[in-house]
Length: 316
Image (cartoon, rainbow, N blue to C red; front, top):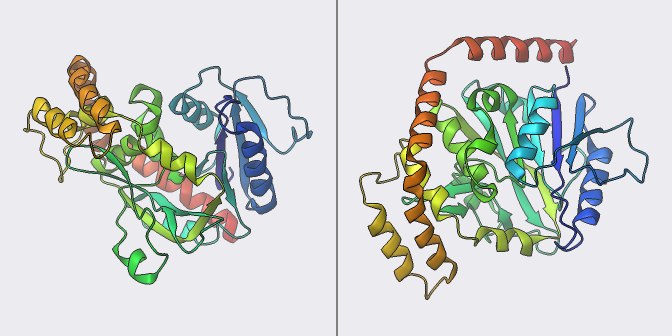
């Protein structure tokens, strides 16, 4: 079994500022910096033809769905590593990025590791330090545009990693179940983080695990896409300590519409909340699924034993 399975999804949309070129730059950085025990999985729609002949070094997996959540699920099915590294095109890694990762996961309560993402143009500032969800469930970028300093890192308390670069226990992802059944792509990282918290796991901050990007503008633009339905649904799925699930959907909707002149995307974001009610039965079923998983110790015990065996083999 490999220690790391690095999953790189390609969304196949060539209109998004040279998506294929950004993917190839990301893959090249992974091939240069991959750990000795690692598996590289590329999930694509079947149209990528591997022009560089990397078939023997990469597991090419076809997923016809264009959605990130479905691509992550497909990559997870093919993964053999204890730790899943999700890396989206546009993020590049340097040699040694993985060195401190296994130590963070020695703590059995850690379900994920949150790396930092910085821009190649402004490396002294944090682009993404993980993600947050505020009282109304809205997704936010943690540490956005904060100065890269000890004080900033000390105060950085992300809910979990961004979908652009995150490291997870495979056993916990499998216990959560298919990400594609949860939510839209923009919100999938928040949903996974909230699910992990519901199962009793935390996310450690990997302040020395850093990815770089030349596509900062794309990450920022994505963070301002409306996702009100997913945000509202999360309030009924998770017992969030920082949320107010008893607050009516309509009042949250009106509040965000009122803020729309300052942030225009909040107008559609607010209205989308009204469509959450139609998913209530599905969300309640998922809540029950998480409760059952939380009270089933067998998968935790088997996962711990498997990870311990891998660690012993590495040490030997």
